[in-house]
Length: 444
Image 1 (cartoon, rainbow, N blue to C red):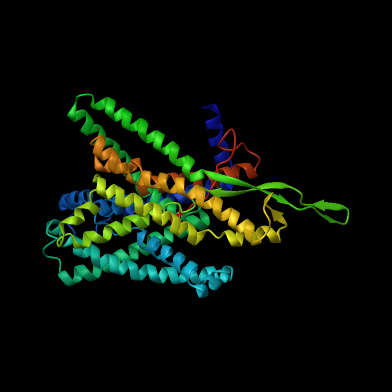
Image 2 (image 1 turned 90 degrees about the horizontal axis):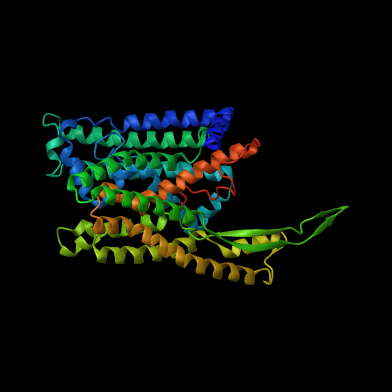
């Protein structure tokens, strides 16, 4: 405890770090306040049915978790930063698959600015479409009672689309400011805050549910909390897990000085794809729900506690893990970089043999990483099925929410630890260092 207090004093004593923390907290406060500003034409006192229908729908519940409840509050930030995330993912895939876009990305700072500008344009288009879909959702029979009858229909459409689009762009601006002047990775931090904002309420609902049932409900609640802590610890190991490939560098003598000759390691992440396979799998499984009114089989794609859903979901996550890893991981480029820097893997010839060796290792470690990622994705459904856990609480036992939350917290802690070590303070950990940096948009 004494060391923890001293670490907090060290963090606060660094002026630059202190300003970044205060700046980040102020912008996050603005974001949370905006999450409770209701759209014009909506009666906030009649939003109970909207909240209930959101909780019943797994995909909408996930979206509401990302925006910290703003979706069910019919807030001006109801869509949050998710349209920007969708646009960023799209641009990331385009830069990988389209050679012309890959060239733009390699232009340095000017190329990055062009891609960022195109991402903003796509964000506006995506937000406008999602805003129209959200209006249709508000006008559904289950939620229509929340609409104010005297508010014009056309005016409601126009004002809602404009406000939701502006709200998303404002949240995107907040994320960029946090990245530039705050603790970094503003987009990921905003999503993490939205997820954490629902945690106290989820704990409260689960506690009330267990106490009401009786029959050892308190003991089951403590067991659930213990499982949650264990899952978080395992997820930290998965996020930071790497296979270190030994690399030697040839000696070079320049004048009277010797360079190189050092032994290093090439870290290959067990979960190189991050959260993207889970997001892709959820998007694919969400498509059949469009045809719910035409086929009874769609229930297997919406019920998270259904065994068939879990099997299909797991297969999708494993497949997308391999596909996305193949897209973002280039062993041939890594082999060429090693060769240019006079590095080599002991016992492996430079060039193509090195690329084949790295690719083989990556394939071997990706399989257990994909299986563990699939397990994390279905854990909420398992806990809801086995322990009869409340849905709002079960989402924190795995899936996208927990993976994003753990990844962003680790990244933020790494930022703080770097600042401490630069000024010769002790880090946040007694041994080792916090490793790995992940953002949602880049495949956390």
